Amino acid sequence: MKATINDVAKQAGVSIKTVSRVINNEPSVRKATQEKVLLAVTALNYKPNLSARNLAGTKSFSIGYVYCNPNAYYVIDTQEGILTACKEQGFELFIHPCDAKKEHITDEVVTMVKQARVAGLVLTPPFSEMPDFVNAMLALDVKVVRIMSGDVAPDQLTPCIMVNDRDAAYTITQHLIDVGHQRIAFLAGDAEHMSTIERYKGYRKALKDNNIEFNQELVIEGEYSFDSGVDAVKILMAPEKDIHPSAIFSCNDEIAAGALFAARLMNISIPEQLAISGFENSPFSRQAWPKLTTANQPNRKIAENAANLLISQVRNQKANNALTKLYTPELIVRDSTTSI
Image (cartoon, rainbow, N blue to C red):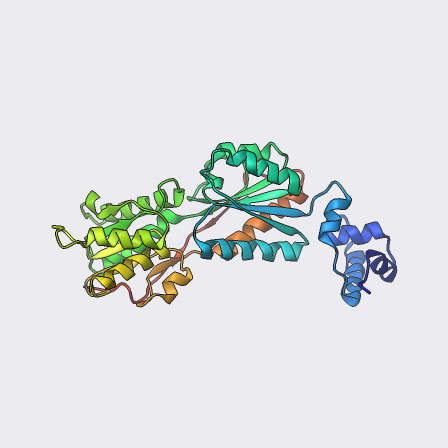
């Protein structure tokens, strides 16, 4: 027989309400009482039924992750980070993949939030970068934490986890310059993502600071996908082109892996004839040959911190929407870039 909350209360010598307060990490319980309850929970191997707990009262113990992202590695890392926080804090996670470009997407998510009775949402791009969507979620009286690109939160609508893509892109581009490259191409991700814009800003600033003339022909618009990298290299390295880049900055590792694949099909030696860098340090960067120079973006840790911040907002009715945490991805140099 599974232990019940009644069993825990009896063993700890406290009321059922006190056990509930301890399990929910409410701050008003004395430390000695909390320790007694936790010892009883451990001794009885008690596991609260989170679904039943959600249905039993007006307070919700679940949060949602709403996303639209074709990068499976990013989604998996983010989910695992949020789940880690949920497990540690006694919350459930409701995952809702959807299409941000869908005509009535806000209505769809509003319906989901109402039906699932989530207490809060973790939003990643592009949803985190859509103010009207964010305001619609806040109007439902749920807490929201956004993961966004940039070094400063764009507003005070919600707490934010910011990723300093601009400085990280600057560092990658500077690395390519330092090892001897000046004709550096930029392979963009989806234009509507702030990460693309911020990484482009870092790339441009590094060129400017090193007195390297910017060449628009070396900038290829695209998506955060493998195929986008393949197509870009076919354009950049076409035999009829007058100028070929000697290095490529890719907006993520998936694009970089596609670029590497296309280059090898064209018998272009990496890194001797073409250096290629990525961004994020996803498995794409480590599984490629040669392994890709990239920027380490700890998506799992970022998501875990976002979820912990969200849960703290859910538990604190006087939440501080001005809270901001900042991550700057760090350069990892591998065999796909070298001096020329």
